[in-house]
Length: 496
Image (tube, rainbow, N blue to C red; front, side, top):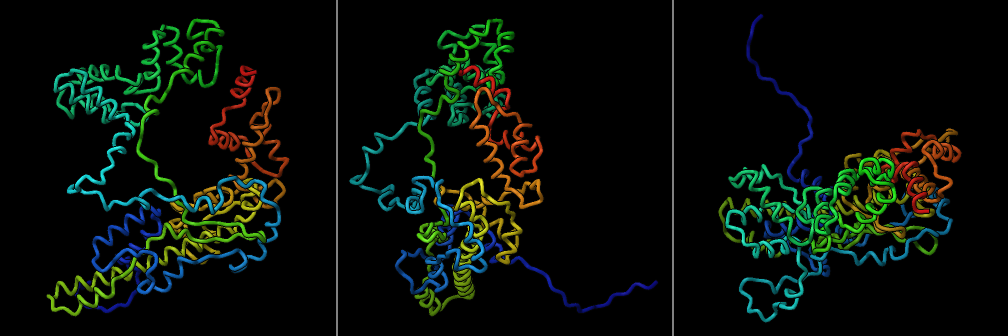
């Protein structure tokens, strides 16, 4: 066998993920808040990009400007006439205050905040002293203010400050004493001693490491932490089940005393930090609006408030390109121009793809919009992808972190995808979400004399044509945070 070298020329095809393609894929899965941050960073990085004010349309791509005004109705998309038959019923389940006109004002606070007057060199004329004076105090600030008056030595103050920093908004200290000791170069006993001291701060129960410890601190302040109450606090799982017989044996008291002790626990707070200010929650701004038209159809349109308005400064690009410059500078300007053009096209394509997917979701789930959640159909990514001729991964990215404002409320796009539960008669499958909703409805109508077991719920659902196993009913019930039939019956009997 001889070994030699030779040179061959072969032709082949392969898919190459260019940086621009990677960017376009990344934009699809970003939420509107993340997208705004990304675009802002690109504007700072690229001198040829600028934010549009919503009135300039000359430099913006015609397709992009058109996508801002895009609106579809069910009749205007292909193959939708058959879906109109399910839209004749009245919408008696419409939630008040959840219409598209109301939710159109929902937007993040950053969109309406003017930061132009903020700066280190301000003269103070426009400084809002009243706003600072009336600002809400956070739990961390409240604990630190007490630490400043505690009279600890510098080493203990450092440990206490670290423990306060590790306390969450609910008031629980999430730090491991051993880790804090190793990080600060001290021993664990000192950290525990400082932690015990800080647990005396207001509010009572703050900086506890668990719910039983939080309740214990509050009971000790009330001088009610006797052996029986201590045993009750250590068995909160039985308290949740309202198992009076087991608790009576553990606490060595009768059932009447157990009831009184549970009532005392209910007067305590498991979240001592809940009364303090926390980080402001950013309101979810819908990416898509669905409006019911007078003739019973549904219109799907993009929320223009969440679409970044980006322009390429062509005048500046022409001016700079005409100047004499080095080769590296010319390459930089050319790259900026290419990136700007690609970003604008990617944003336009993202908007069109969201609108296309949302319109298909409305078409597929028309019965939901007409009749309610009980009529939600089974749906998966492949069905939508095949209908709009896109890849499943694209649909998955588009529906991530995107929200739709409908006459029935605000929903994440992924909400409309639901697993299929087979039918007993071989008919159309049932949506898992619709079955879950039906289970919840059955349990809500229970009485103390008629508490449904999981097996009984299976029988009722079978009568509705739903082929479901008992363990599936139990799984759906637990996902709804509904206790078992034994616990529900016990609670009804106690409250009767």
